[in-house]
Image (cartoon, rainbow, N blue to C red; front, side, top):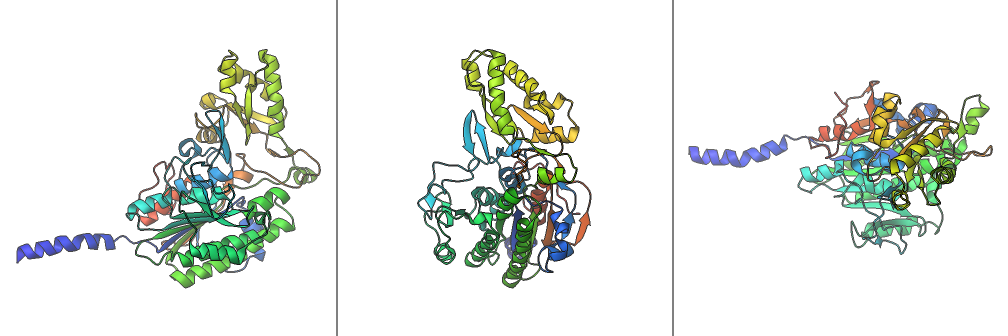
Length: 490
């Protein structure tokens, strides 16, 4: 009798232990591309009760969340949010960067093919991402029974958040006017995606990303994935990552003020209201966990700033670096190409060409640094290899180090004076850019809402890298393998 009882207890205990792990039915990560933190309040009077205002009233608001690295750009932001890490560890150094002297796109992968169109827009995968994501760790924790799906108009905004083990990532092919994926995930689009594309087909070549219609289209696709993949309705927690790309494209074209960006955020607010209602209907209010944040912010247009007596200007780093190559050649007495290029104010020297010309890399770099420091509107020029000992304010120095990789990260970083953004220097320029350490670019919104969240607010310093460990902590799963952040919630 005792032996039978012992056997019964041994059989039951594992199930009891498993049942004690409480998790939501679904985790939804929403990233708004180029959303400034202050947009929560700048447009607040016009928001409806069920969109941003619901997040702010029901959620836990982190009012002092900063991007912990430079440069602040889309690919890095999306990868850092979901890995809890920084470029130095994830390998995602920008939207594009150089790997051992060869230019590379963050998600480019010639070993895969497009699924859903005949273009090259689907030759993408997460293989250049060196770290695991929230979704990857969720898969591991549930023996790969959880579903993870990523949706965005930009490929990098769908692929990097979903991670390596995702069931699917879908992004927009403007050349064909439809959602696509790659053979990294599948060999054929699901029937529901084909049906969605037929119902939402856009004119080939039309850039829907540059209109508020792209916001609606993204949420339409997210809802279709939610319903057709039955996310949140299985035995294990699922995850849906959604990125809103149109806000970034519209911001780049029209900047932070005016009817275009206003209309985009009012549309986004309406779509959030609709999406939350859909989640409530499918899963039940309080049965899902949502977080909303941004991959980076955006600076005010420099002409707008100057018109209001504020110091600002367009820096045109790409023009400066082209001139730098000629100045370096003259200084070093060579006709060899010495500069590969500039990306987000990173300066990449041509190591191979420098070696073939018989020049010393350190001397070339020191001369490049000296020449750049003579230019106007530059606060610092950081040598990545020795930045820890350079007289640069600590918070900025730490972010430079976090954004550096020996293999992919460049040689020098230009830090401009406040207000001087890496944009066109033209009195007729209406747009904006991002990429800098300044709060315009690095202060991002962050709100958690739903399952396991008690409404509240914190003003203590938090980091983009804290999002992943917070979500993983709530789910009682291991944080991603390159995570350097800390859980936020009490």
